[in-house]
Amino acid sequence: MKRIIPMVLGITLLCVATVALAQAQSEPSTDLTARVDKVFEKWNRTDSPGCAVSVMKGGRIVYKHGYGIADLDHNVTITTSTVFHVASMSKQFTAASILPLAQQGKLSLDDDVRKYIPELPDFGSEITIRHLIYHTSGLRDQWSLLQLAGWRYSLETHAINTTSTGGAVLFAPPDLSSNSC
Image 1 (tube, rainbow, N blue to C red):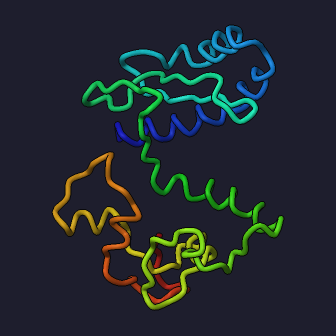
Image 2 (cartoon, helix red, strand yellow; image 1 turned 90 degrees about the vertical axis):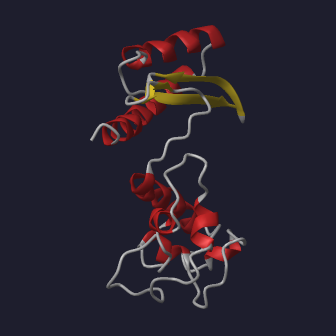
């Protein structure tokens, strides 16, 4: 439970920060720093989950900072390099980001995912973006594969590497009777 709360809080804070930072982006850098720090001051403690913030303007980062603790059990502070594993919580945001691209004709939900991720092996069945969005790709879960391989949880683990070594898909996409990545 201690690990879920920081994830949920982090996503909530990201939403709050997006609104606050969008308003602050037009202001000078020192005022921006003060305004952003003010938004996150109550989470910038050694006993609280927090978040990492990056403000971009004109395609470049104008401010970045970490607030609070990434791992309450081990007292690991959040920095601008902290990796947040939001796992399945990020799936709906990824889908919501892809749909406008499909509506603009920049990609098709029926494109083979290897068009965009060429390092993903051919498992014998075409896997489309639509399959990934609806969790019907048949791809094995990276955490299950790591566990089967005897690996322990690590922030340095790469999903593509572990998914690619799974050997086969769990089922041929788009089998709607099972859920996968």
